[in-house]
Image (tube, rainbow, N blue to C red; front, top):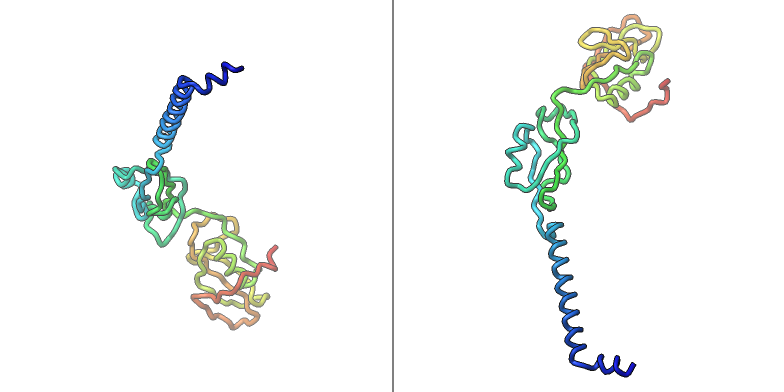
Length: 203
């Protein structure tokens, strides 16, 4: 035991102890550097603005920008040009790691189709709200003599009756005929008054 304590006080112990500390410090420094290199610590790039770019332009657009892209969805926005990027994630000017994948949403070339809802026998107000919730447009509304007052008697596309369940394009203009308990009524309107949602009478 006395010899052990004598060794702890010797120059040889302090020499070995110093070498061990230096070795551990160098090892930790190398590991930190390797980890920073692997994770590209502190190396970020600014996300470019993809909006408005066509699909054909994307490969050339990202050259030299150190990012990747992936088109993950197609959204139909009638006011935007078909086939162009309308949304991205992350947003432009965000700082991201190099080679980060930017997720893109492209405006569809064709509007999606949907099943025409049943509007007949509903009130005019309900029919208008249903059309808007389905992404359809309200066209000419004509009042005709009928047994019901203010209910939908017919639904049309370009003057032709359209049955519930028929596939129509989103954004299609739907014309309505509304019943009026007055055989002399033939008035029509091109627009409809809008009001808050109320589907209480839906079946």
